[in-house]
Image 1 (cartoon, rainbow, N blue to C red):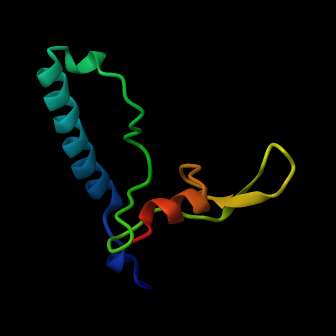
Image 2 (image 1 turned 135 degrees about the vertical axis):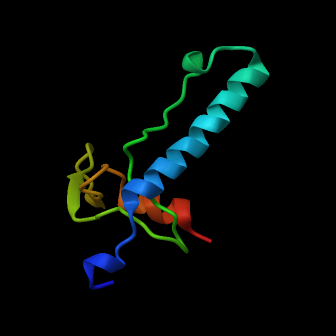
Image 3 (image 1 turned 30 degrees about the vertical axis):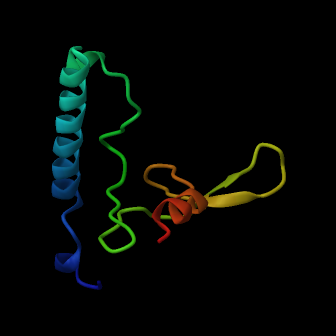
Length: 93
């Protein structure tokens, strides 16, 4: 992808993903007999859109963080903070 017009519309992709997640949360809440707003989850609607390994990915692994124990570090996404190693493990086939 070299042309800006070739870039995926990540805002629209995130909106579609967020709606799908909201529906699952609502369905889960209904099945448990609780209000959707009372369901505790760690979903971040502002997180990068990632459909790896086959689809578009918004992560930008140009950041860096050192490990707290001083044994090294890893590349991280400048946008959302996800570690590159976590991304690779999560999207491995």
